[in-house]
Length: 181
Image 1 (cartoon, rainbow, N blue to C red):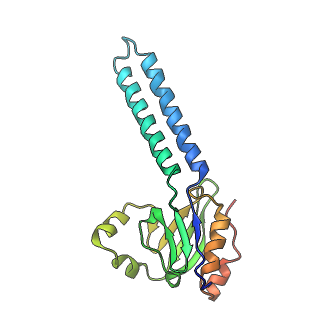
Image 2 (image 1 turned 180 degrees about the vertical axis):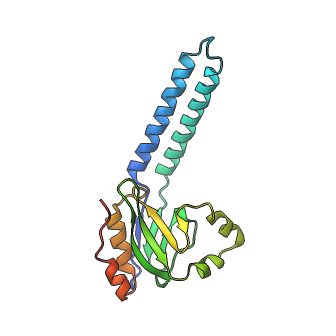
Image 3 (image 1 turned 30 degrees about the vertical axis):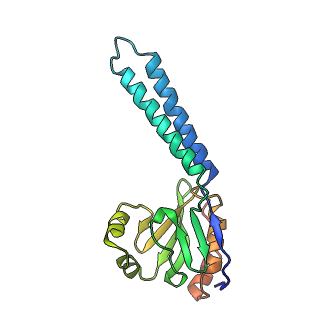
């Protein structure tokens, strides 16, 4: 484990933002189509068009806000590993048992295995524990970081995490793995 206070930050992926804008554009086109083709045979086409346009605007605003948020999405420092989408405090390095890859070609993740997930989760306030139940990235004792969510490749993120792990035989095995292709 590196004991210096060097901090590595990752931000949102530009590809994810581009996909969001494509979705907004597609919804907008559908909305315009329904509004333009609003005839007597389709009395609800006007509503469908308006709803799609409203959704397009909402998605575009959301993507714009996420894209202009300069706060990091994930940090790696001496305190531990923190990923915003987990809605957890930083995970201390000594609480991490293993780091690996999971999933396949269509959807891959970095998987963080926790040593004592129950103790870590039980230390959280009740409202925060309740919110974790619906988080697909938090499935104790595993935490997940999805591919494409951050502005670096899974290999780079994995290497940055593994570099900070304390030197144990299990963590040494983590250093030799690569992301699934």
